[in-house]
Length: 118
Image 1 (cartoon, rainbow, N blue to C red):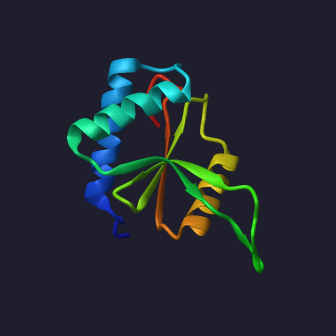
Image 2 (tube, rainbow, N blue to C red):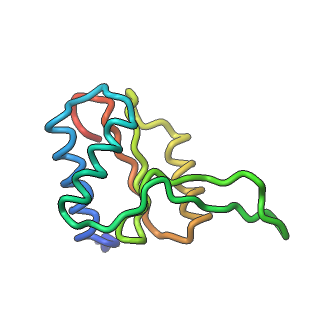
């Protein structure tokens, strides 16, 4: 059996995502869900940074363009918010790249775009 990394923290994050989805439902834009999650994180005292900036190292330089994680929660979990009809492979690839650049070990992709949170 595989041990879940950051199990308790992940459960707290997912719980807040369910809270938001249960109250707002599906099909708002991503920014609405991000605003609601920020409210829930603040209310629960969950530490987070929104739109955390990361630089990208390429060979011996830092590239001009950066990437911004939707949230970094508990200073170690990247949380990417989507509001689409399904999680596409490119979203997973994006999350893997975010992990490489950030040095974090866990990324969660949460999709609010369907009737059920996924």
